[in-house]
Amino acid sequence: MEERLYDVIFICRPATPEEEITKIITTLEHACAEKGGKVEKLEKWGTRKMAYRVAKHREGFYVYLQIRSTQGELLREIERRLAVSDVVIKYLTVRLDEELKRQQKYQGKRERKIARRPRKPAPAPASPAEQAPAQPA
Amino acid sequence: MADEQRPQGGSSYGGPPRREGGGQGRPGGGPGGPRKGKRQFFRKKKVCRFCVDRVDFIDFKKVEMLQPFIQERGKILPRRMTGTCSRHQRWLGEAIKRARNIALLPFATGM
Image (cartoon, rainbow over all chains, first blue to last red; front, side):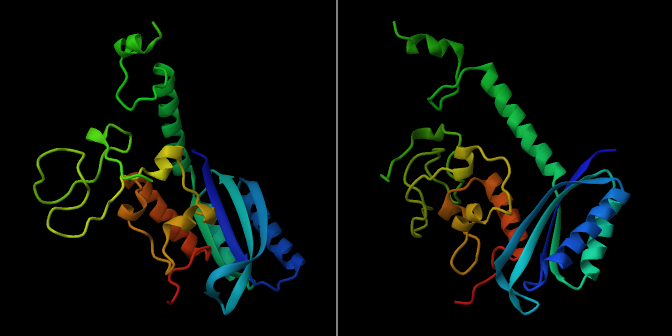
């Protein structure tokens, strides 16, 4: 079963007390633990001005979570809880593992390319023969 | 920022995008802009900022990275303005749309 990596961001109403927010985070963490997921990162970005009005608020309290899990079910549960919650006004979940795989693929290619031949400042494709005149005679 | 003309695009940028209408059949070089008498769009052969920095992943959470690529009105800037390569423009668009959905960037600022 491949491991999936998710980014979850949600926004709470700006005036919510700290404990409410912590309660929601704890709920999500429990949901995670039940379904075999792991919370990799948790960041509270705090109150921040939003780019447009959401639920008649101009500011919101942003929370960011990164979750690693093998079950897609977990995300459905998380989204359900966020949708049901009163304090959460907006949420977004993004699946990241494909993108990270792609990123690693590019990095891997780049490293192999560099290892294969030394970096040349000239944009022309390098060939071993070209290095000879470049060396100080 | 001089108006330099690169010979036969050997850079990693891959040369200017194809123009409609037959040119002189030369792949690169020459002043930019279609021949049909329209205004010249590209004056400088910009390189893709992301290609130069070797960015593999455009994070939608980093608003400051995305900000230079949207207009004041909130619209996404076209590639010909920013000089981004097609691959990164696609990723950029996706990232901007995600950021818009989470209210980090506006959809449109009424102006």
